[in-house]
Image (tube, rainbow, N blue to C red; front, side):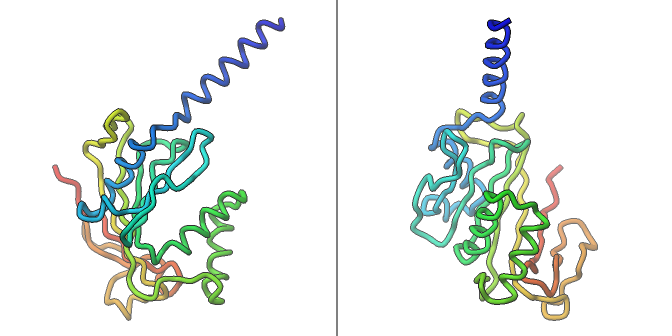
Length: 196
């Protein structure tokens, strides 16, 4: 019975490790910067994961872009890069997540902090680039992702449909639109139409 228990524990441990494989640092970096404009990739700061699954700085940066490696806990592949002006907002989100806060709690706390001025929000339009795709199209030995899709988010805190001239929902595929108008999270969403 004891041997069976040990085998079960080993199986569960092996299965858990297989589910959360942490890729080598160079591969995490190579994949993370796929979201960035090509001219910004080499100088971007990159956050990724150590072997314990903790988010750490994998590479310091020399420009105004920060990239986040794919989270091994989530399905599919998704990486993002954003303006350093968004770092206080993003870092606060990571901090609240590490405290076990839900998405609703995070939104409420950051809203209160942004509205009071405690949380510094960008004072000019600041972009977030997202690149995502399926695990089947990802080569974890090279860090390349085939047939990935881009999404662009331009944060303009407290912007409105009136101040931007944008609608609050897209009326055509790929059309820019303003999400969360009038709030600290106000941002222009742009989802390019996928090529056939």
